[in-house]
Length: 370
Image (tube, rainbow, N blue to C red; front, side, top):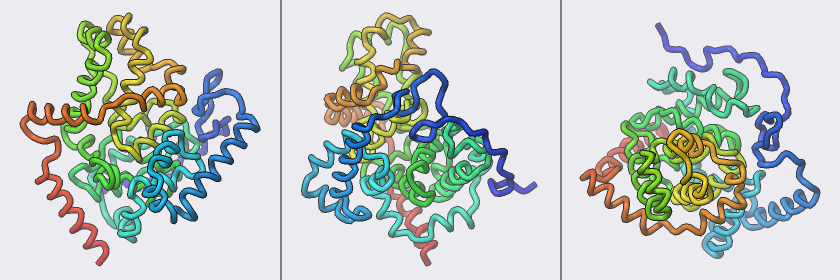
């Protein structure tokens, strides 16, 4: 019996019209929308946003032509502006520039089309099964087997062929889905490659390899940081037998895109793509610090619930992110990484493994270009 592909399915009925927030998510009744506010933005806020957009356009140039020059000339200005939030209308372009994915796309013309159309993946049925779980309340993904779900399938299938060692893991859908809301399929695919293969920062593929080795390392590091930074809460976690795998795994696997308010997830992604995974640790620690006095009073069941459902005031990016930026973790993270590797007697991703993977993908790409 032949495997079914996404093109074998007819699109489902178009969902009925529903009120949407400014990001395209269906508004929840009597609740805050994904932009963090029930009220309409004021004329002043629109004018302020327009001024920000003009500054960013001047900084990046036409189509990003001035970006590299500006980053080299004024790196501190770039960092400060990214931490304040990238204008939504420019987010897709700037994410490609800061991630290195634009260069990968230009160096590999036609490869994405080859992967989608001519290659087959052992993960196709798993992807089809999972795609309806990715941002189901967003207008782009609501229709079963509709355009959004087909685009998501194509990106995930292409990656599972490009890197058969990683293949497809469920959490990858939220990364790809988020990217597709801001760019084309091909652009989203190459940004996914840039993240997992480490075009700019440390590769993320260990988050999705068998055994989730990088997740285990990150949880070890986060647990140690939390106990050092918030010792009373760390002691309470010990007494209640709480460990980060019970609440923080998805933070790293989906970079907060799974369950966090969308407006906050976007701000985190702006910084994540420019500064790397440290921001995930910083935001996690800032959340624990913000809610410290409440968390320290809770017994096990209520504590688990609270760690998976932070209050809305804690999710305000203008409050949470400055707190996160003030937390210094770089040096300690590296020390804890070395401790983890000694404890496990091998690096999370060995040089030999990375070299084999790199050679394999280079052979694949060269074969597609020829």
